[in-house]
Length: 270
Image (cartoon, rainbow, N blue to C red; front, side, top):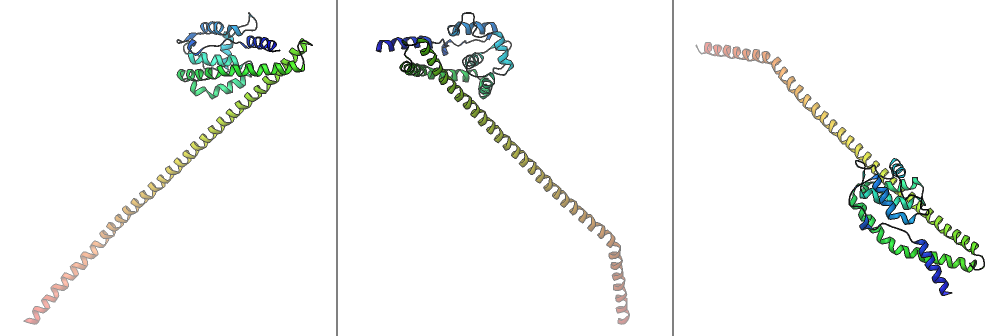
């Protein structure tokens, strides 16, 4: 039984073996499209189901660019950041729709422009993938053991394989649904953050408009005050001018009266 388990483990390990691109094998220079397709085929060609299959084609790259999964090349050249994004699309497209990959790509759009940031993310995920491989191997072996107990391969090899495929299919479907829900959650969070930011901007804009209105009102009041003061001053000057002749006449009259009184005093004295 132990020998049979080891044989199954070896078989599954061989089936699970995938080609992958080491972080240190990422290109250090920008590549033209022909160079990109050749590079991907050389590094990931071992994952092809059939020899005539292509890992990546020019049509695929153009479609990804058209659907905004990757930004357009710079002067027909693809940077390291482009290559990393294309690698992730290569793995995701087998289980997710293009629209879901597009929504996921939008989440990293701001970081995409930084090749250094994309490389940092790639290195981190690669480190996580290494132990995850053994987790996948262990869970696959467990599924195979469960099927073997229920449908022994010695009794019916075809039924054993079918049951194993269905069980793996259920596992794949459940993980696909989990990924879709995680993407939906990311989109909802991003939309909520964008809505909140929009509301903040609108509130700031309204407050700025109110402040501007307050300043205008204050300026109008100040201007009105100045105008009233000027009018008051002008009115006072006009009134003074009008009263000047009367005051002069009154002054002259007083002078005449004083002169008359003085003459009378002189006459009395004589």
